[in-house]
Image (tube, rainbow over all chains, first blue to last red; front, side):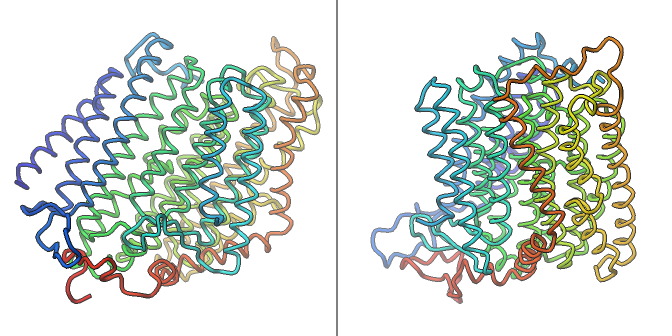
Length: 115
Length: 523
């Protein structure tokens, strides 16, 4: 399972970097979004995967030695919520940038760099 | 109620009330400024609480560390929160006259305060993942401030700023995940303990490099600084000023925090790398600045250059160097925000940010020239202004010979001196172009009627206050340096931080549950 996840994360990172290096603003935004998905899976894998019960306890005496670690999942949940909000914002920004500058090519966003 | 929580609640409450007042301009302006004034009061209270050297810990929801999320206020955090509140207040007052109606109606003050909450949160948190969350609060608010108005240059800058900062956030998050996988904790104090007991310290250094890239991007160090001069000159002046003062410094603060508390296992490698980065950042930043002819772009490159001095202080890792680094941090926030605010006033009078299209300000408004002269010469490091003492401490530490880098530290000290000279050169360039030069051909004269007396008071007030603060740091450096030294002493004895957070007890079985993976049976 870890191997499969590791390969998936690698592919996601590669795809994200490829998209980030494209010139269209929308593709760059998609790249950022893919990157956050890759990171979520990375946290999940790095946090340690194991087959076992869910981390709930019925009584105080129950041992959790075989339970999955709930913390990485909590982190991912937080990260998903944040990345969702950020994605919504970046899409709106990409739209507005296209309206204001009249281009979606990042190479053309240079008028402010001129001396 | 304690000041630590209040530092987060005050900006939050202000931001929400700004949103609730709807479209009333007056109410938003009053709330925006008074909220910052209250935050300044609270941060002074926080400073008074930690001034005796105690480290205040707040466990949110009463979950004890290391399980719950905690806020920790030591001297460094308190200094950073205080100086942020000072800058925030100055910028809020300035914004009343500088920011147009449309932007205020669409929530300028609300997002300014949300950003302050993120900044204060990042300074006060004691949990690495929580720091990520505060970074996001700060970032998303700064994105909105950057884009608000939607003008063409703004959107061009915003695309670069947003994308690069999101990449940095992804790296930060990935680093948090990997660090958790290695140590099983996210609490900074607990990390400091666990990271010293790891089986494979080399792997921890690898994680440290991920954090270095993530925070380095935010702090704009070489070679990750390129987004900063491409974006900081595009939004309104007040926004540029608060970004220039605070945002990169949050990155520097995060670097200081993790590289004094957690990643201290392989100092020669990690801090050696920081040393090299510091030198390159100083040099490239200042070389970028000397060729610029746009007021704000020139100042933006200087931010990069000055970050190098702070990183140098961190890299040298002696008490004097770290104290110099902290002193540099607060001197720089005050001075740099002030210079940006002044660029806004010259723009209002002269109608441009281009140095070529400005001139004759010394003859027209000598007082503005004086107000510019103070922070500009301070940035250049002329005694007796604040920048001199900041540079003096860092350079003295690098030449002292008690660092672990031997002659290399001295080399960096010489580089720092040379960079100081170039900084002075580019400040005199602004001085000569904007203030001394006669008004160029075909450019309208300095239009003193451009500002009403009310606008004048609102724009000059914060500039004068920050200039006075710069002077007071320069004339009473020992008073301020004393705080920096205490902060450095706390940073160099992480055991006090750890003890304050963990309370000296073993965090073994607190809830009747034993997470065997985290705390084995032997704990």
